[in-house]
Length: 388
Image 1 (tube, rainbow, N blue to C red):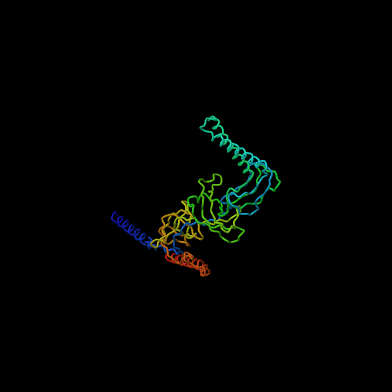
Image 2: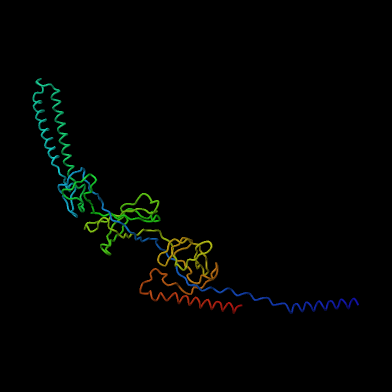
């Protein structure tokens, strides 16, 4: 009985093991390797961060003054006309000076009398006929008469307004017969052989602008004509309110075409450092900032970068990226670090040597590349589904 029970248990156990073996699923086949993702790429290239600035400036004369008389009086003669070029020291205005001329004549006569008196007394020196103190007084009288004459000559000279430097005078603000005071503006005088152009630059360019840099200016008065000049003066501080740097340029004006007060369009190129640049489409953004996908040894590598400046269709970046490396432009949505990639096209215009005649053909390249990318992606998806 016991033997029969053991035999039955052994048969039942063998049947269960056989049933489990027959119903157990077969080991799954090893999964196929992920297919390489199709991408369109472009080379990173080196660019110089030169900045072309176009700012508005105002013309200033190298030297410019508003003319005022030294004393009050009645205008006798206006000795200039608008636009006249005058020499330094030229008489521009004369006030009525009859009294001053009489005072000069009187002072000259007194000096003549004092000199004759001194000469007579000097002839008696050493004879004892005249005391020495009398001769000394006569000598002092001569010196006093000389001072008085010079004072009257100064007063006479102040009745004339002279040009402080050579230049071009403006329109006269007075006429003969007008009464003028020391605060009456007579006219203007400009030295415009060299014209200065005042303009401002943003604070961010303060380290780039230097005295001596070449530039060009254009005025609406002369259309598209350009006048060459150079940076002459750079201010020592930044304007606290505007955050701008004041700059002055010098422009030769030998032909006397340019005028103070003119508006100018100043064109200035500021040299910059060299940086690696990538196409705009290659620059991606994530939680940690900007990055680009770089193809290295057939695999996608995510390289963090810092965006510096856009220039045309390129973005200058700073990061662990070298000029000449291949960056992904299209097909970035499915990429992840280490994923194999397959290059199916190159972005149009990625070469700096691209020429204008090929622009039409280049314009169709992105569409063709995108179509190739889509077709390759569809093929990869179908292959993956078949493998599964």
